[in-house]
Length: 415
Image (cartoon, rainbow, N blue to C red):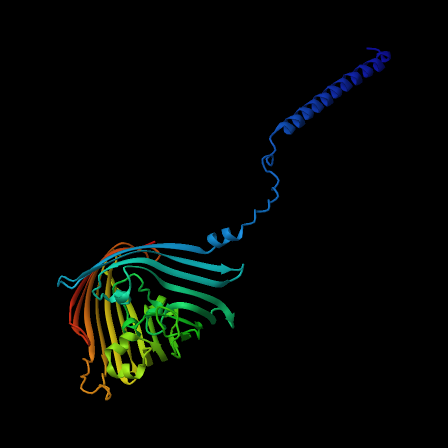
């Protein structure tokens, strides 16, 4: 090849290189474009995430909707009871009732609680069962009210220290404040002690310290109906162990004192001296002091509970002493239980000197009770109760009237 051919060969080489570079650049651009298109077509991982919708304002409730929906409970009750002394003397009591519980609250606390409990009762006969002493003089059909009170919470001080109550509830003496005997056959001491277990009153209750709580009230002293016939009423105070002792140790205990005047026709009928002091309106000058306690202990087979109430004082001018002791056993399955109770009421019956020739009645009322219960439902919170009870009262001594053996069969449901 001659020297003149060299430039032509160089030109050919350059053209070849440029062609290959152009091809490479075009291919790279094409591949990049394809890759970009594929990436754009892939699903967006956040495509299904929607923007949080704005909250719609809730429809405001009417006052009736708030009243019957917020912190509102309506409980129903059925009871059928038959009693007999075995001497062709029997009685029955059938009832249907209800309980309304309502609490009013703010966003931070409860300010007011209401409770009303009543039942419509039909009675046929009367045998003196311990849970129906009020029924002695009632008509065949009668609507009874039991609880009817309002609680005002946290009126002053720290939470739970000062609360107020007004209305009708258990007499604040003994264990009745902490024991619902509305449906049971076995009762505590107050019905026999004062002539009524509930009264109309107002006062304060709350936490006294980490270990103690208190109840201080003024009572009308009239029992079932709120009435004043010249009586001064009753003042009552009770100091008891805080709730933590019950939940942690199974222990309840208290000390109580009550004094003033009450209306009690039964007390005047028992004692000539009390009748002479009470006057035409049966106003009894009253003083009582008492101690009470309850202890629960769990065993492998069930729970044993011992209850005691002991008190003393005066129905002027008679001295009075009372005691009640009760043992309960509840099977671990909560399906059945057994109970035994002994109660003793002593009164120093003084023959009034103005009633010449009249002998004083016997000084003692005492009875022994045995009871067996089968539970269909026995909720721990007592909001669902369903049972059949068979109860026997063996009267050991009577201040007035004959001694009897009273058998009572009861069906009860509360839900």
